Image (cartoon, rainbow, N blue to C red; front, side):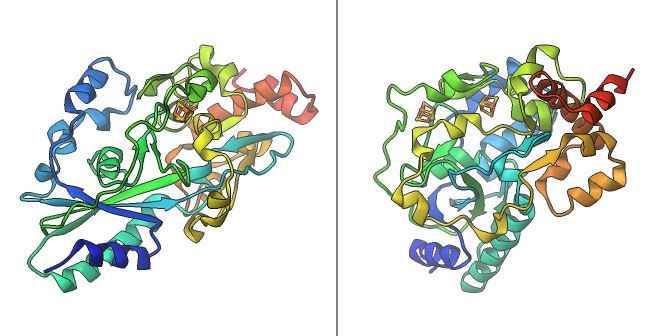
Length: 327
Ligand code: SF4
Ligand code: SF4
């Protein structure tokens, strides 16, 4: 019979930094999730409102599922690279290989090994796009605790974590760890630092979040958010950067970022992006999670960040481009 210990060691052999197991049961937050949807805090992310039953109950995703194997990769470190002049910043998770691909590839390999050991059970991998509340299950499996910024925090290595899961019909013993339920206490740093006031404790209004606005939102961005976007051309890391759990410690220095996420590009030249063709975009985003943003969205983001940049610095070529932009 397959054991949790085998699952943990096989997953670690495949490079996952954190591994745990929890029972496959309905989400505890299904009511809150439906209220969040009803308040339209998901913005244009209609896919979040689709198949709610599937999303809140893993046994709808995999019939007769009994366990969820939760894994996490550490995708970034606490220290950031300096931003060159005239560049827009990219959120850390999108600077290396596309997490959908690199994590899924390793999860599929883990599933293959597990199937060899237990051919009677079903193993189904999911990364982000699959309908599963990965954070909730990862917390239940002892990988960390959810902070006020709604992210999973491991109190020794922080929240730069990419989550994945395998839903299975194999009956595995749940892992138990001594994880504090509340990693935040009286801290409100992420709430205070969020430039769009998108965070209230344990809830993020996605429709006001720069990550959503720059990556998921397809139409024009409300001008009230332009200044707040500051230098972020793709995503935003502020609520993680300020978190005390993400400040550099001996443990975080010793905990390596998985090589799949080694940073290839941390920023983009704003003038280049404004001049891009579709082919340029495709070439620049090959193998990267950045490709989620279409050409028009990248140019829209670049134009807003360029205006913010030009408010403090002069750059003739960029100014000329922006002056003629959509005029
Ligand atoms: S990613 Fe940025 S905009 Fe979004 S909640 Fe965090 S700090 Fe606010
Ligand atoms: S910044 Fe503070 S309040 Fe926000 S998630 Fe981190 S510990 Fe919690």
